[in-house]
Amino acid sequence: MKLQETDEDLLARIARNDSVAVREMVGRKLPRVLALAVRILGDRAEAEDIAQETFVRIWRQAPRWETGRARFDTWLYGVALNLCRDRLRRRRDVYIAEPPDMVDPGPLPDHALDESDTVRAVESALAALPERQREAIVLQYYQELSNIDAAAVMGISVEAVESLLARGRRSLRAFLEKADVRD
Amino acid sequence: MTPERFAELVEIYGAELRRWPEEQREAASACMKKHPKETARALQAARMLDETLDRYAVPGPGARLTTAIIDASPPLRAAARRIRLWRQGVGFAALGLAGALAGALAIAVLLPMTAPPDENGAYAMTAFSNMAEIVDE
Image (tube, rainbow over all chains, first blue to last red; front, side, top):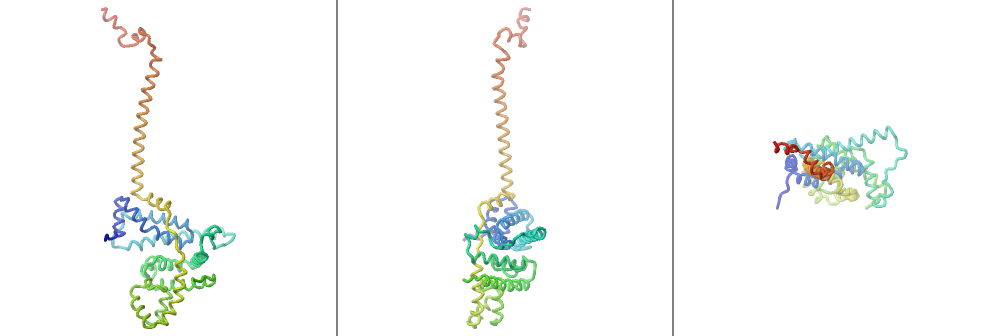
């Protein structure tokens, strides 16, 4: 059985201008980076921008990567998360400068035709969470990071992550019960 | 692990033990065996939430996004630059060849017009126009 090459090995090959390694890295990381950004931002187009910018950072970092200093995934999700935070901050600034006429957290009608009520309810429930709780849920639950890795990505302690997770799950349950989402 | 601590961890990490901290899983499994009723009750609500959250799947990246990211990488940009330079080289070569051909064609077309087939006249315009005189001498 062929062992999968480590992320660090791929980075070293990318630094040597290996286009096959580039494709391998994109295939390996893009789906998870995109999923993280979509769930944090709740907007596919913005999430795609974030994914592109995250990979620009990877290409820049490849020649400078020092093996053993940090786990690549922790660094990668940290970059993506910070870019999402910047985007959310800008979005808030725009809202403060120009308050929207009408707040409609639901998706557009043509989207609604393709998505189940449950999926939309979960999207809305996640979007309604305070930012840090949403980050903790996305990293630990959806990205399946360990509590230690989630804490490292968020730059907080494991205890703080656990507190955010517990509060986040309680809020999600309450929101979904209110929306009458059942299995 | 006590059933109370088990319930606390369910509130944090959900019903799937694979999402729990690795060092807690064994104790959690033992607690489930020892206190099946209490642990089952704690797991039930968490499992419902987990199953609902699982339905929010994000579709994978499309070909357009994947290609844009790959094309923006240094190895692909370097390759694109090499191809561009090669094409420019071929373009310059073609341009030079076309210029030479055009020049040759122009000479072929224009010369007979500027130099009519007048034997004497043509002869007079050459460096040997005074050849007859030289021979005579």
